[in-house]
Image 1 (cartoon, rainbow, N blue to C red):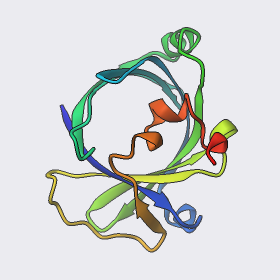
Image 2 (image 1 turned 90 degrees about the vertical axis):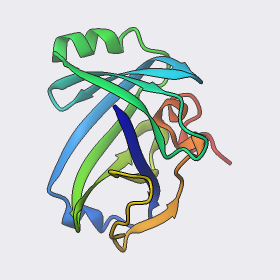
Image 3 (image 1 turned 30 degrees about the vertical axis):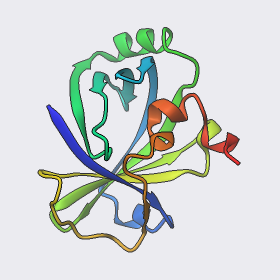
Image 4 (image 1 turned 180 degrees about the horizontal axis):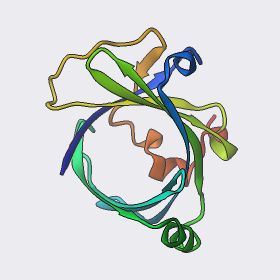
Length: 156
């Protein structure tokens, strides 16, 4: 239940040509406390409830628990979420031995594109695609829970 991932900005839309899948994601947060977040997600027609713990100091690891819920349950829970719903398209792109999840944001976060790669251990080496930009692992302002409160288009 410990998630190890690195997060990067994306420099071009070239990943779209390389993606295996794309899925619309709508998500909100029932709780965005510093110690834990509780997320409700509708990924296509499937709902998820996720609890994430506080990140390690470097932002590389944190506790994550997730369970599938029905679309109806997810839609009902989204109505209870804090203000600031996240709307994005997720592309899955296989690069070498790893799957990158690339998010293209809409609404108040339009213009932001980020990629995440999950790792088996913190020092794992992975192939970096040409469209991968600056690493933002551990930069809290890029967490979805923070983007729901301080959207990308409000940054200066």
